[in-house]
Image (cartoon, rainbow, N blue to C red):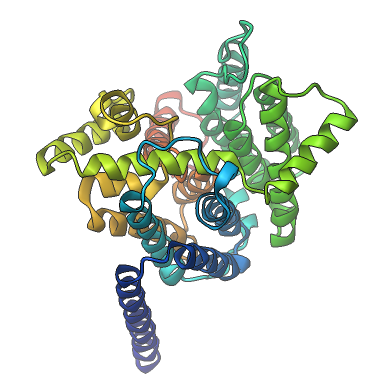
Length: 433
């Protein structure tokens, strides 16, 4: 009892210290107008989060991606700017860009401070695949085959265009269930192992087709899934760093080649990499997404509380039903009615639009809760939800919170459906619970 009380008191002490530091930093943000200093602090918070996550390769994937996005935003929009910034000026002023940076700072500060940094053995994720069911494995695999064939538009595109459908984007959920039904964690080197290899091969083929038809984010999601499931035994922090750097280069090359700016050759690849180095390794996607967040902030000054509540309601409807009303899609609605943007928007700016500064805290608290759940998760469903959380970071941090909440909802629905399938088809799934 005394030991438990000591642990609780220590936890409370560290929580209070972190809270006090958070309040001090918020007061500092509110009293300084030097955006360059704030941009440097954003890099510091991102690096601190990265260091804290070193004992958990899965969270390190999240921290690495968020950190690189923050680096691109800080350098591209504030520290260097110029040609590295988004080429739009409609809402580019200190009245928007300075408080918007505070939004991003507060979000990242909360995540960095209150993530517990607990260690996690990613091999535990493989326990998901202890359901050996050839029938449902085959059904899901056939569904993936259909999505592979019909989930892309094969008509010739003009310039850079992404021609994959939402079904293709959500394929990682089917691959996760396919992995679960493979039985790889139970059957060792038998049929379970062969089914797992088929899942890995399928993911790689999906990535190749995605790159060919202009996709990049879907490829990142699928590769994250491959690392967390089939390659979990080999996944380490050092491996994440190597993969992360390789992924940055790959995404840059795919974007340039698919846009038709250059034709594939050794010289053109070297030229692209040289220009990328000359741009301080700033990636354009986070920069454009950040400009969309600037339109969110500017639009929040135009609309009243009742409109924002209705917008959030339609967003929730979109999580459950899909294809939300335009009012629930902040980026799309703002683009149609107020300010131009090219899509996206960093996660906290959506919640700021709906609820102001408390919304930023809500978004950060949701992320911290999911990050800290790695330390306590025990169930198969819990592991699957955390895998989806990590896999979709490239979507929910840079595009829309819908890309986080809807996949989690769909995963829960499919899992419940599999439980009913156990009873209906009377298979021997004694361990599926």
